[in-house]
Every structure is written in structure tokens, then in C-alpha cells.
Image (cartoon, rainbow over all chains, first blue to last red; front, side, top):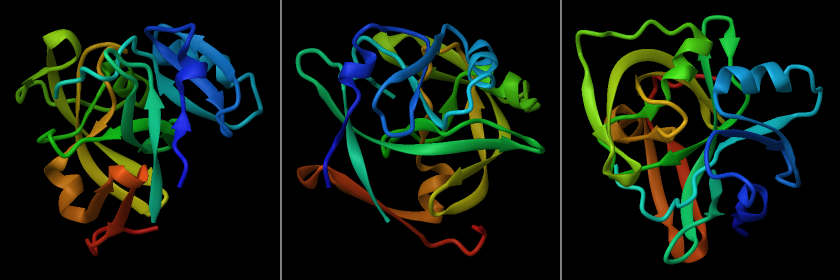
Length: 62
Length: 138
């Protein structure tokens, strides 16, 4: 099974919420908060997946 | 079902992480699929507070939990009950909501890992989720 590479989609973003096409091909919308992102994507009929943008996913400590 | 790992920006190297498309539901409201980290190191599940606001989830302010996230920042979180919808089924779990978009959506151990067998195969760039709890439904 191949990995899904988010790096090209996230390259311009280091924070906030991003809606991407459900084939992970392109960014549809971005917002600093989820509620504003919802307002943007409700105007779009394309199916999306929402991704949170971080500069560095490697150092996440839970 | 088997799911892929995702490659995300990282330093000193790119991050290869197990994430799942999760629809969060509360009553008639639901989110689009959101990528959530499947984190065996997290005791419970977490999500940003604005997700709870969007869903209209009532959080329990009497039972706060402080979590440590990116950059070792402490975030105060409060539990609220939601339904999560993943490919394998629907089920109700408590999510600890807190912080802004800097709180990563996480599915942690309690109770998600009680309800599903999670097997990580990072060497194959995949993980599998198999439902074991009869409380799950579709």
C-alpha cells in the first residue's frame, strides 16, 4: 500500500485547517479556524478531506 | 481494513504517520472527513475546541485534562461525547476538546483501542483497523 504524500499540499501552510480534494490532489480552501473553513467549503460541491497544517509533524508529543 | 500511512512535513526528516479519515457527528451535524492521528501513545482522544463549537458538543467543564502537544505547550481540554464515523463503522466515544487548530485530532487508546484491533505495519506503510466491539454499528 502506497503512502499518501501530504507534503506538496501543506508546503504553503504551517498552521490552520486545509480542505483538500478527496483524491489528495489539490488544496480547495484554507482557514485559521474550522468554522470559517466550513463556511468556505459549503460553497463548494467537491468532496474534500480536511487536514490540519503544522510546520513539523515529526516532533509531536502526546 | 488496511489504511495507508501519510507523509507530512517534518524536521529532522519527513514524518510518516498513521492517520484515518474520521467524520465527527453530533446529532444532525457532521464534519467532512478529517485526518486524525491514530496514536497508541495517547491515553484518550483529542480535537480542537472549534470542532466542538461547530458540532454543538456540550463539553464537561468539571473534568478538565491538561495535554502536552506540539512544542511542549500545555492545552486545557474538556470531554464531550461525539459519534465518530470511520470506514469500519460508527461509534460513540468521548473526545477531549481544547486549544485551537494547534491541537491535532487524535484517536487515542481509551476507548477506541478497546473497540478495534489496531495493527501498525510501518515497515509496510500501512496499518489495519478491525472492529472487535459489538457496540459498533453501521
